[in-house]
Length: 185
Image (cartoon, rainbow, N blue to C red; front, side):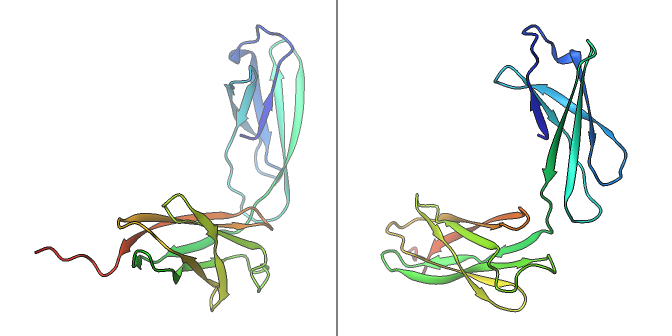
């Protein structure tokens, strides 16, 4: 969603409006898709791929069939992607472990070398979560986590890395299974 609005006319219909979006990068102005929202107003949606990163201001123009117009602007947070991989995890129930969960690389060449722009959270799949620890490696960072499972079953661990500088976010899930595997006789 790039904008939302409410019309003063309580009987306004979806077909009463059109929207156009100027993405602020010199590309052609395009039509926005308008839909009703749950608060009695309307949302404007649009998608765009920027050819270069940097600061952009999108301008959304909303036109009413009665001749009224409204303009909204929005700062666009764009960032180069994060590359996040996860490892398959094995654990022993009732024993605390520290494991390398995966790796993350910020593809932005201007990203801080110490990774201070990246935050890591780990959902352990058993109703608990914690912060992950970044350890510098080349390239990027190893993601370490400490946890203890108290039940014997397979869990799905979800790792989320967020870049506070540009807004990029990466999410990956991996299984965590008991080790050694039980034998069947």
